[in-house]
Image (cartoon, rainbow, N blue to C red; front, side, top):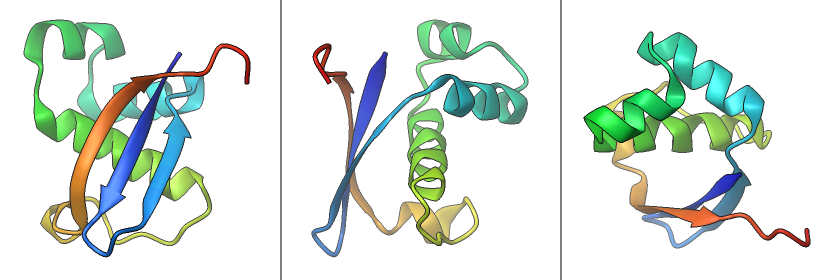
Length: 85
């Protein structure tokens, strides 16, 4: 499983797993399979949508997905999960 490291313009950082629930929500939004979307399309907007889902699922109140949310992001990195965690 992978995780996201989300760095915001205010300097806060959130790390969250791309869990099966996050993948499912992405697939419902994108209307295609998770792996196909990232393998074939490689769209950065999909990474930003995942960061929105991970942030929302962390319990944080977030703006609706769109430019208002994206403008709060400084960077989003896709990392390998810690296999020992």
